[in-house]
Length: 172
Image 1: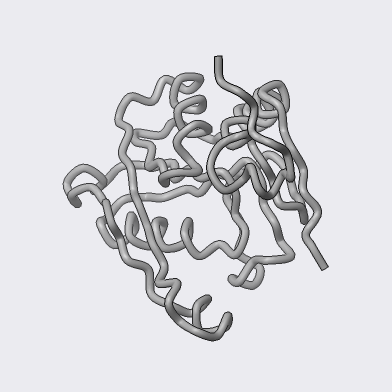
Image 2: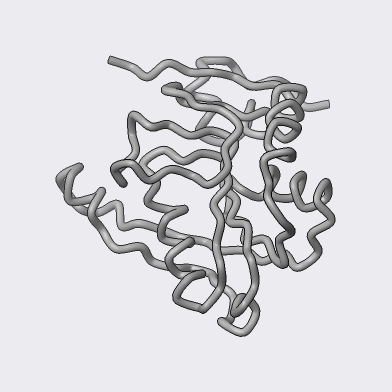
């Protein structure tokens, strides 16, 4: 069975951001954006919230493991993560686009905690049906879904072109 796809517009993303903003309690002293998915929503939130201390984390999970279950249990490899002194003592909003299995954002949250920061997780979409962390969920999320979300910045680029089953558009 193929997953249902939901293709969003920029207006949809604006509405999701607008839905998130009133949820935040208190101010954040830093934002940790998870690459690549969190870059655009993180930038939009940072601008709207006036957060200027913006950091990035890049995480990879080994794909060479054979069994799906083994792959889901693999330890993360941090390709990029800021020095501890950039996080220590700061209320940090950890931003990604989607919480699917929850592995990536949970790994980053735990790493922020181990650097003596105070992480709060935030995503545009939360998929409780794929969540590997029991009752754990993002601290802030704009929508719950069971669909594969295609954001406007993904359309007609990269591997999502095949997923959308659309021919490439000629560039001008």
